Length: 153
Image 1 (cartoon, helix red, strand yellow):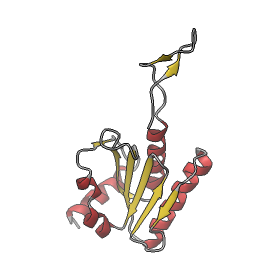
Image 2 (cartoon, rainbow, N blue to C red):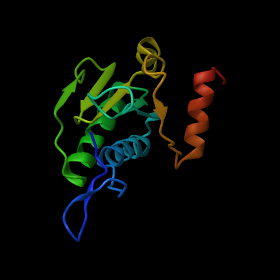
Image 3 (cartoon, helix red, strand yellow):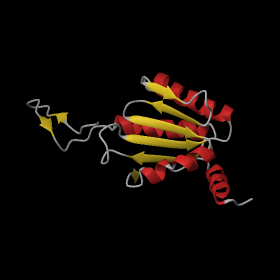
Image 4 (cartoon, rainbow, N blue to C red):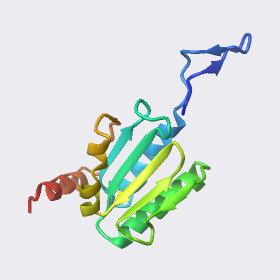
């Protein structure tokens, strides 16, 4: 969990209201942007800090094929490990191709095949979590994702 304490320059005591960068949120945003850059769809970031002490954020992404799920997971790994110097703690589901879970401790990234995402409904299960604003850089991709979820052809 992140803290907001910064040492007071004059005597070294913590200043409780001083802002410290939220590294977990930064990690979640990088994962979401990387997923978007690799054609991930319906990207949601959930802030779970008020609901659990186990992790801070979920990043939830849909992909349309086995190849895309793998590409998204590999690119997120690359961005977080090489770009930010973070180490993944675990991975699940890579061989099953329906749901890949990347565990970075305080951030967990879920990359789903759309039907599996609907079945597990993490957004509903964690419905009390705050959603972190995430504006797509590619609005046409977001519109296509919304249309496909609604069944519009």
